[in-house]
Length: 342
Image 1 (cartoon, rainbow, N blue to C red):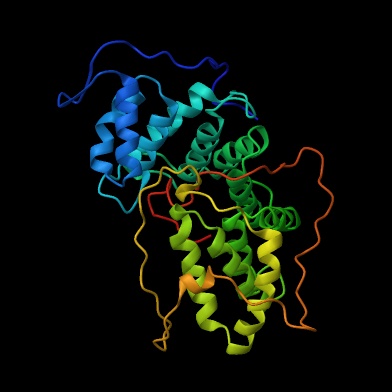
Image 2: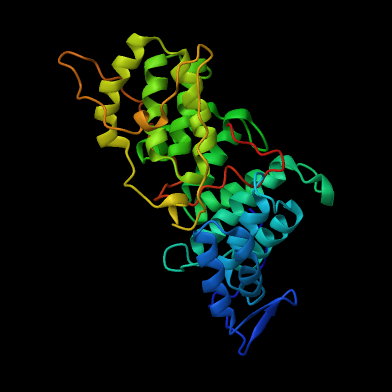
């Protein structure tokens, strides 16, 4: 697979000295100070105040600043959406740091997510800069992040491409295998996607109990930046499930919470995402969809109740993806259309 660059510099970027100014307005004592102020504002949800500091730090080659500035521009909901700028920043990160050590370099998670974001852009294209959809290149970038960085989000995106045959040969068996692997690692996106497949009976036999149980666990595991599309699926399944299935799912979730739950993490898995508004959801009959109840503790499995098993995992094939721990959640960015559903 071709890399974006032939060689990269693995050394940490050096900071220029002296006061720095962003866009002729805000002065900072140094790029380090700009970064700290920018990230402080970002953590507090004050994106407008975060941008000047992040811009200064990004120009000084701070990868983390570049990444979060790109996320601001890639956000389809926020007031600063600019996919051309986001694409350029993600591309810069990938070009400059493609070969960082995936295990020991602190920049590696941000580089991996940049590859995932670029893969999303290449799958949909960006009309304002004339970037045409390129599923093959999208699959290459997702595959690189999935294998070199062992990135779970990249593995998830690549599995979706394999399922549909977008940019790669269609391989339903391998795709379903990786949805199962990631589900059992506590990956909320994979859990939600697999739940939707079981609900619709696509590629798997229809199983409403499996679907509701999986999506309930996914809601519990979901980072803030991914909650909207995961809660969309939860609403659809919860509203369509009969009362008996809901009661059965309570017991299943109590068991699966121990097996497939990811330890509680800060919002956005990196602790740096602004607060996300939670919509009030209702079913067509007016029934309130209580997301908080879904994330609460379910009663224990009733005596004699059967807990469905997840699909068996085939042996890992040589050269396939190897999953590790979580990511930064980019499925709500990196696509001008705001793709929030798998």
